[in-house]
Structure formats: structure tokens, C-alpha cells
Image (cartoon, rainbow, N blue to C red; front, side, top):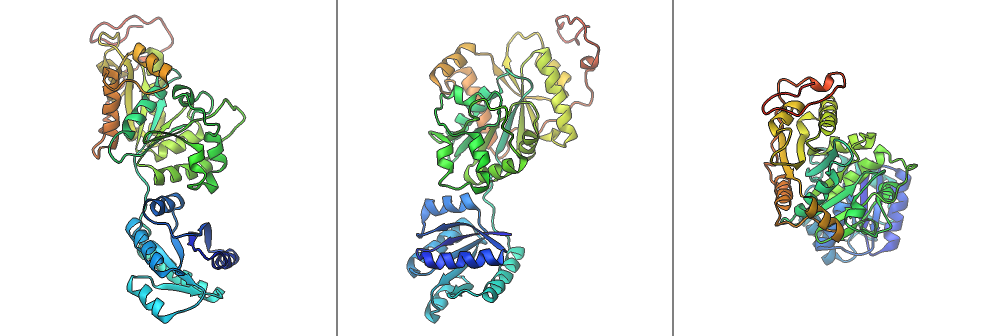
Length: 403
């Protein structure tokens, strides 16, 4: 079924059209608007609803012509059907001159609609409607709880939103232990569960009530602990489609529990940032998750982020890469005091610090066309994670762990 919208100051005209469309059933009218939108308002309206067909009243021809020009500039290939109470030959000539080939006048008939739909479907097969959807969607997946994935996700999102023309959304999909509401001191009563429950009717009126805006960053937090709530994959897909139309950068903070909806999100992501720390348990689980993601053909999208790295670490980055079987894309220094100050103030880490600079570097790599290079997995893996539990010694420089 095609998605359609109606733009008509004449409510009776749009009501009669809606009745016929409902009766025929080949086009779902997702929204009616009673004025001629223009500029940013028109662009936002089209992104929010992603129609394939626009039914446009020509009651005010001058405004209708401006709206048509705005639609063509925003969404090349959009099918436009002019609607009116009567058929004026001079008006039809003007519409044809600007490229509008479809026209319907009252009283609307099933036959006219069927013929119009036939031509629209033929046109869409030849030239589909241009997509708005950004490909800059990033998932932050912790190897285990407490490795700082939420901190990296939040700070990278803030940094990304401060780049030119990079409207960003940060969504906390950790329904059990989501931290974004706490870290940013958000007081919006609406949350992800509300967005999920309304995902099938999401529009540009409802969405602003659900998110909290901080500069050029919108945040949708996970809400209070609600173990009984189950989010469906279909709800996730609708939310993702909506967000990818509305934002240039979409950042998703995952729980690490590998829920079905989390796998859906990672399948849609340009990159999956697997966050770990230089600890044996964290590295073990990071390797387990990376191997599992490879079975889902997601291995090439995974980039490892090593958090709380120390200059004199017990396990060197080279050893970590050998253990994981994948290069470490970026490291983040351990700055407990800086993170603590940021949490106390409900804001991002100071950008001038070493840690803050790394967050900015990550954000820059996310929005650049080149981005973070795809990982080149190691040909051989260290086998000590598969050994029976034992007593681990410290790693001698350049040597494997001793059991």
C-alpha cells in the first residue's frame, strides 16, 4: 500500500478524498494538513511522513505552485495529484506547464482514482521516490555492564551534534539499566516505551514531546525500570525509519544483552562500536560477542573501542587485538575525575581534556565519508579463552598469558 498525504485548506475536499481512498484501499492517507506548508516546515513534514503520493488542493493556485516547487526540490520523484472542486482548463494548463500530470475533481469517482493509481504505480516503478534516510546510524554495544559504553555514546553524540549540519539523535535502548536519563539529568516524563507504543502513528507533532533537545542534539531516554515491557521488532523498525528520515546522525545505546530488537538495530547500523576495557572478563565477552556477530554477517561492521586505557597497561593493545582477533579502532584514556565532574553537572566531558578530544575525534570519524576503517580480522586467534578456568598470571611483555 502506498503512503499518501493530503494538503488542502478545503477540509470537505480532503474528507471526501479520504473516504474514497479508504474505500478503495490502495493508498493509506497518513496525514491531512489544512494549510500550504513551505520551506523548513514543508521539508520536515515530508521527512516525518515519507509519502509517495501528495494530494494537493489547488484552491489557491499561487500557493499550490510554490508548494509543488518545494516538494520537487525536497523529494525528486514525488507523485503529485492536484485536487479541486471543479475543472478549469486554464488551471490544468498551468499545472501541466509545471509538470503536474494528475488531476482529480469533485465528485471523486472510483474509476478516476483507479486510473490515477495505475499511472502513479507505473511512474514509481520507473522512478522511485528519492529517499531521505541517512546511513549514519551507529550502535554502541558494551562487552559487559560497566565498561562505559553509555558514556562514550553520550559524549560522541554531543560532539557529533556540534559538527556542521549534523542534527543528531541519541536513543537509549537499554530498557533495564539505561543511563542516559541519569547522566544528562533529563526530566522528560515521556521515553522510549512511549515512542515504541506510538511508533506506527509517529509524526512531527508527537515526536517533539518524546525527546529532550540539548542544542543540536535530541535525546530519547529509556525511562524508569520496567521489566514487563517488551518492545517488538516491528516497533523498532518503524522508529528507526522515522529517525533516519529526521536526523543526519542516529546514535543508539544498547544494553549488551543481545535482545532481538538489539540485533535488528545492529543490522541497520553503519557501524557497531563494541566497547570493552583492558580486563580479562571484558575482553572475553567482547570476543564472544564479536564471534557471534560474525555469524550474523555483521563482523565487518564491528569496530572495537577500548575504554579506560592506561599508558602502562598490564595487557598491551597488541595483545588485546590478538585476543579479540580484530584491531582496536580507538582507545580512550581513563579519566575518572573528568567523567565524575561531567556526571555531577549532567553534561558531556570537557572537550579540551585528552578524553574529550578522543570523543570529538570519534564523532568526526563517524560523520566523515571515509569514517573508521573496516576491521581486518586476524588470521589466528589466541586460544586461552577456551581453556578451562585457572589462575592467571600477569602478562610478561610480548608474551601470551600463562595459565
